[in-house]
Length: 297
Image (cartoon, rainbow, N blue to C red):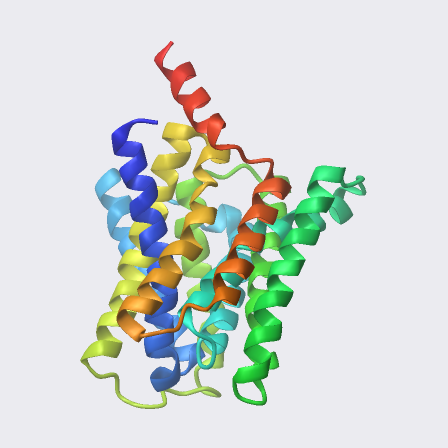
């Protein structure tokens, strides 16, 4: 792997791991709906500015149904569920639950295509589910009484990503940049009708305002650009390795900035989830270097 690509990979993992830190800070003061609307709207505006600079004109009307379906399952719904969960669960857990998305994607894909799951994938599913059980069993016993609702919300957010992944594989051929740009505008439109029913809880202070900007501009807008560059440079399979690094940074940022405790269960549960995800996706670190060798030939 080129040094530049490796730096982009680490940067993207650090950014997406940080998104759960910022959600944790802003979810309670603003409420999930106001927070997510601000996030996707900021991201949409940033991507629009970038599209103007790159002279990429999105065909929104021609793909409006596609953008709304993708926006719902890949942004609006999972962002809302994670923001809801962030009101009670720590950033470490949110990041780990997020990394189960490929596992859900594999299950949904098998049902979608009516295909059998291989023994390796089955083992990965079992390990991933065991990891989630380790985390859930621990947190449900020490957190607030209704913590199970927040845990379910986080798991369903990852499930939603799995739906979006399988939909995108079978949907109309639209460029990655247009998918990101169009789905962000669609997400903003989807969430707007919810605002009157879930108004802003309080005026955001400096820390909350910074968290909103970081979520919208950096963790969503800029992060997408980094991801698309990695897909171009390394291929989709190698770019997927960011999934395994996000929990590491999520745990690290939660520990450094929020003083969250890193218990043995957190490390063990995260390891099971990451290993299970690697087996499910068929990812091997060797693939990255093979890809690099092929590019240099």
